[in-house]
Length: 289
Image 1 (tube, rainbow, N blue to C red):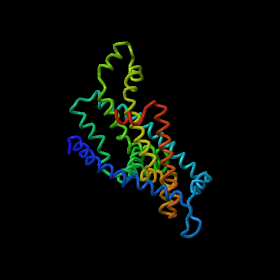
Image 2 (tube, rainbow, N blue to C red):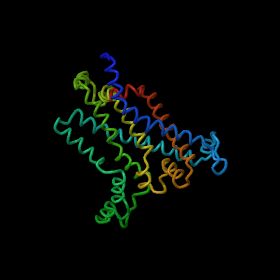
Image 3 (tube, helix red, strand yellow):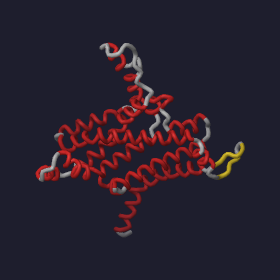
Image 4 (cartoon, one colour):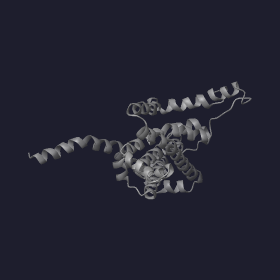
């Protein structure tokens, strides 16, 4: 066996677990979901293949409205996570000292030490009408009675931003950390204001990290289930709840698989449009961030 053959065999053995993981946990389940989405129930235990499930979705406005609502809310959460996370990432990457960076990252990681369920219940304890904030407002005399802050869009957005903001900060820090400080100093030396340096130098350089963070946050938000349901209640109207209802409540796996694929197509189309508008490519974004 030649040295080239040994190197090729080593690469195969190195990537075999990853390829097997992709095949078993991603490719095969999606193929199964695709087959199930194309099955139409014409009689008890009698199925035939077609696009009837997709036609049923298109003819039901409540499903369209729920999907569009989920997409618009996910875009809002992504934008807020970017606006809040960018200054934090810039401070960690370019202003904070080497010793304090680890501490700041640790602070950002603390929310991930507990599950989504515990974090959501934490917000419930804070925002319900008998919760901490309502009780504090009554104690200082700012309100006369209990204030219910749950079960509205604002609470859902706040909870989702809190949940996903770390996934915006990490790629931004990774990108900004590779930026030479001399580029920023040159911008100021050439007479640029802080806003000009931000717009002409920092943001273009950080664009791969911005795009990567936005993709991750948008996909996580659109696919979220616990936070919208627990904080939004019956008024959340999140598309993942519709998928859950089809699978578990109605036991209509064909419709559930269809809705799952439609959510995947919708989010993928949104990501593709975002890449086109930003002038980035997925491979280049992943490589640079």
